Image (cartoon, rainbow, N blue to C red):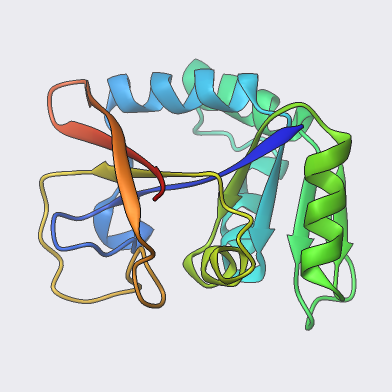
Length: 177
């Protein structure tokens, strides 16, 4: 059975605005590359999926690390939860109805970790009791605004791990209490 894991980079004050946080440093980039390589797949809300589509086509200014990440990301199956999209890109499946059933079946069918990205999507999956783990990657910035990591009330959680990644990122791992 697969495990749904919601994890995103965020500021110290809990916002996940990727434009304000900027790109991760080399150590965190390597961490995310290895993480993506090990995934069984990814589940995205529309907004995060549209951001991640950046990796669908090579860019002339990419370095080797960017190309490695893009190759790993492209190889993973993706499920995109959206009522407004009519189609999705390569290696992706659109989920428009009955999120609970679709993701429950996905968890039962696959093994390993399925990455969940998007605070609104994560809230819906939390409300359905489908998130198995939360990974909060704190970076040393204070934004003061943006989308919060928890789009609704924070569920009861129990800390199971804390890890320093590189020189400036701490990952806190929680499971539902």
